[in-house]
Length: 172
Image (spheres, rainbow, N blue to C red):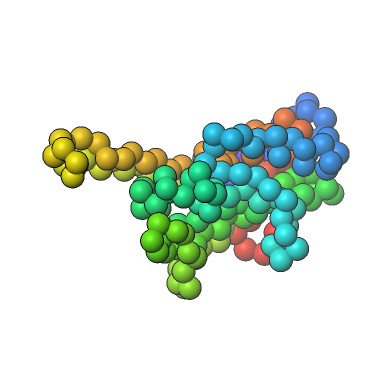
């Protein structure tokens, strides 16, 4: 693996692992879904021009309150396309600004967006006095890591004998 591969997020298929057909790979990647994860993997829409999408559950009712309290201001997703000829999952990371109104997420019309390989790890904890009893303590704790979404996807692709190619420019 070269320095360029590391920068772009490319991870070649593991040697000695037979490549599965696309249908099995799709099933394997969808199996990464779990109810307790703050992200989901789903089939892409035609407008998204890819095969699968992994994204934060920012609009799911169970997660809205958690994300709003944490002040999440970004939507992060990974769009994936299967390149059968090369045996690679081509992936692009995308991020948009989110605006909260009355506790409901609304994608803002902001010009702030990114595409390419994104690596981020952040943590925040807020301590304050509670209104109810004026006790001091932790109000909420939040952590975010792009690896939380991407690492299981890459691991699943490798288990199926496929490589992972991060795409910043060009066709997904």
